[in-house]
Image (cartoon, rainbow, N blue to C red; front, top):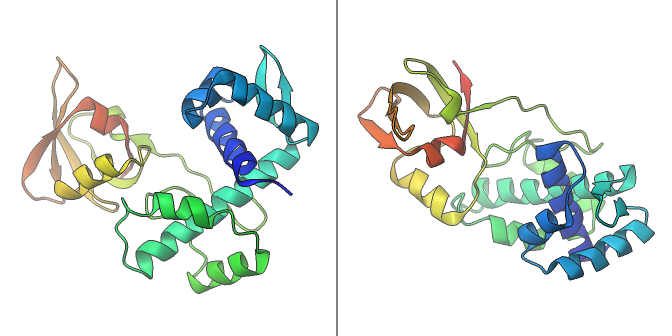
Length: 219
């Protein structure tokens, strides 16, 4: 049995390791969890004793096969609950993360299976993130960021890599949501900001920072 805190650590380590494909540093975990490095080290030792991570001081941490299984189980529940909250209860996509953080720790395989079936076995959550299946297999996701798209190319918005409420509310304000068709009209050489047009409507400008956090696929 894993505690809420242990599950959160495993989820963070999974996220960080998937971004770097290498051992994750204690400092990186501390920054992500907003916890002191000494406290992180203590938790990593506990997880190591449970065979959920492979950890050596000063050499970073990596999930074991069992640790990855637990992390993916938590991620699966989190993303399914986000789908439920948006599609069935009418929450906005910027409102669901904190609620799903609480619901993801409910330990009932039957409930999760029923939830998945009720939602029609979705593959992606409201932010475009892939949902692991009941075997723990994560759907492939090979999207580009909008910042990588060249002038004149047309793409479809598939997801976001920044999930803060402020960012999602900003995207809603400019009508930049999943499924939107985007054409890059111009790229500013000075700051890499973009002039884009959404679904053949009026053009707008977005910063490079915004474009780095928008996931797209070429049409």
